[in-house]
Length: 417
Image: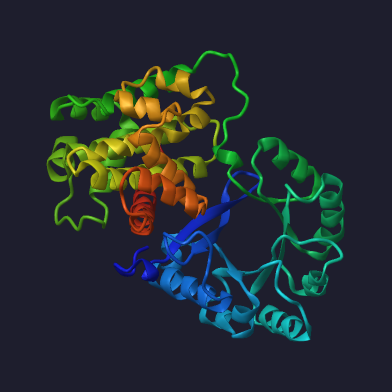
C-alpha cells in the first residue's frame, strides 16, 4: 500500500493465512515492513507497530486485509504499554505478543486488562519455561515454531495448554506431514505455506472433468479468441454462464437494467474481463486437491502479476501476466507435476518457461510476487530490480490486488462444479 511517492512513506503489508483442520482460513497474520526498500525494520518498535496499525489496518481496512476474519497483529512492548490495542475492535483482532518482549509486572497487568476487555492474546514463538509463562493465563492462542521446537516438546506443550482452553497454532508449517503430526498432538490451527506445496504425485490418469476444464482454461486464454467463440465457450458451461451473469449484475457495476445474455455481458465488460473471470472460475473447478485458500492465493498472485506486467510491458500486453500468477499453483490444484499440468495449456513460451523455473522477466515478476506475499522483502526488492522496476510499486500492487480479489470472491464465490 503506497501512501506517498517518497519511499520513506511507503508501508509494506502482506498477509499469511492461518488455517484450521479443514483447510479453511481462520485468520491472517499481517506481515509488516516500513518501506519496500528496507531490509529490516529500522524504525523503533512502537513507531513501526503504530504505522502498521494506522497506515495498513485503518487506511486499507481490516475487511480488505482479512475478509472479515481475525487479524493477528504483532505488538512490541512499547505498543502494548501505550494502549494501542484499544484503537481496534476486540472482536476483529488478535494481539500477538512477540517473543522478545521484556516481561515484567506492568506487562502482565496490561495483558490482564486487555483480556478482561475481551481482547484475544497470542504468544508468539512460545517456549516452555520462558518468562512468557506468566502470560499464559491471559492467552487465547499459543504459537509454536515447528522448525525450532522438537516434536516431543510440541506434544507436551499441547497436552498442558489445550485443557486450559488455549488454541495451539503450529507455525512455519511447510508440509502436509507436519500438519498431520501436529494434529495428533492437539494442534488445530496451522500457519505456513504447506497448502501451496505439491503433495506426492500419483500416477493415476487425470479425471475427465479435469481434462475438460484444463482444455477450457487453455482455450479461454488463446490470443486469437474472438467474441463469438468466447460466448460459445461460456454458454456451453452452465455454471460459467450463471457466474458471468450474476457478476455483471452485481452491485459492483450499478447497472440500471438486468443483463440476461452472455453476449450483452461481453459487450458491457469486454472480452478480456470475461476471459479473466472465466479463467478464475475454471481454476476453482479444477481445485479438488487443495483448499479454497489455494485458489484465493492464485487469484491474488494473478492480479499482482498483471499489475506488474502493466508497468513492465504496458497495458496492452500486461494482462497476459494474469495467467502467470493464476497458473503458479496449477501443480498443487491438479496434483500433477507442473510440466505435466502445463502440457495441455497453450501458454506463451515465456510464461511456460517461467512456471517451470527458468529465469526470465516473467519469472522475476512471479518471484517478486511470491517473495512479497511471504514478507521476504529483500528477495522481492531484488526481483523488482532485475526487472528494472522500483520496489515501491509492490505495496500498491498488493493492496490493489487484495481489493480486486476480495470483490471478485465476494460476488462470485466458488467455482464451476
